[in-house]
Image (cartoon, rainbow, N blue to C red; front, side, top):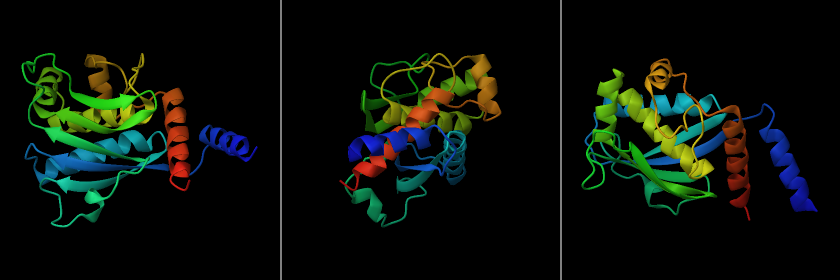
Length: 199
């Protein structure tokens, strides 16, 4: 009975305004991004998820922003945490033209690991005429969305299977987000993940 009451409370609060839920992201940069590029990536993903009531906490585990001793990077992954690798190139034998921007390793329940491919993001940024580091932040946000919500895509917004020029315009204005339904589900899943840490 208590479990049912907890689930009801989670679902109810997830559908109403409340305090932001937290997602911790361990960032591993293998591409040699600049400090400014890393800051822009982080700020973009922060803004995308803040719109849905989700607060991102970043651990810089590899790259220019990584401290010599980031203890959190070696700790066991918690249910509301994920790791993102920034790789310079995509999978072998995949041309950057039309290549996926990233890949996440998820089930219907979500996941904890994702990779974003710099070369594919650069190619799409040049095609759409949007800043590379801005699009990189969106690619990270998209893969983080899969780690929360699972492998499915949506008809609109951040979780579309591929972005078009109209989406690029929204990206330029930081206006591409999770749909309202996705945002509610993401908040509920993160609440559940937070509760499960105490079990």
